[in-house]
Picture: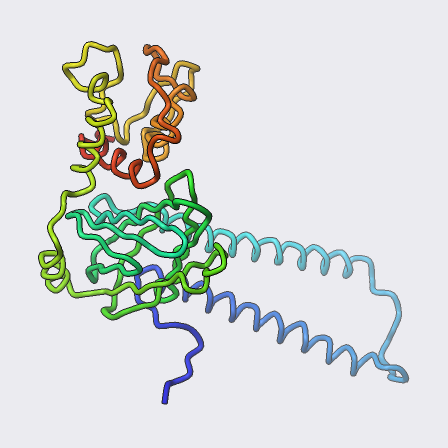
Length: 312
């Protein structure tokens, strides 16, 4: 007989903090409910029709003090809750620099994951316990949402851009994966399993998978096949920006803006290069929109990232 639980087991570092926030808000809401409900009952009994309670007008000074105190107390409470929730969310946005990077592609109606060594999975994801895992995700068709209740994490996966999330699993086991955004007629069947393993078991699992070329390696081959090396290679005669050390570096644009060379910038530069021309270069790069799909974009971005990340 299964045991009734109020919410799923907490299996990630983030889940503990989310549960603490939820419990705190629940307790606070309960206190307010008891306070307001109790006052209503007391006032209903004390000032009922026929009682001898005084019903004269309150002194003006008392009314002002009560209004100021109630308004200030509510304001400070709201600011504290905003700070607590927003600091928790912001602290979980930035993945550790040494996080294990796994690429995810969503499509109707499956999850396709790819590990750094080239191992592929469908509707499944194996991760090591205690190690930070960073997911770089995109969709091939419509909006999906990567949701693991045991991790207390949910991230929309969008067509036409990269989204990211990270977690650190703390308990081994198999945990359900859902799509939390209605994505079509078989939306309810778009699920999978996240399996958390001990680090040594995960290493053995990765070693047992079919050996394939990793994502940067496939990106390098695609980079050459598309003719990108003819302009961006160090030996190219065409005056084009160098890609070595580009990832993570501030880039000065011709219109005076300064942007960060992150995955989103690289993606947009491949699809529509004339939207963000680098200062000092002519807008001669052709657009690859419609020529490469989301999976190819992941390969190309991974290859450029592998060429070196700029020191911050």
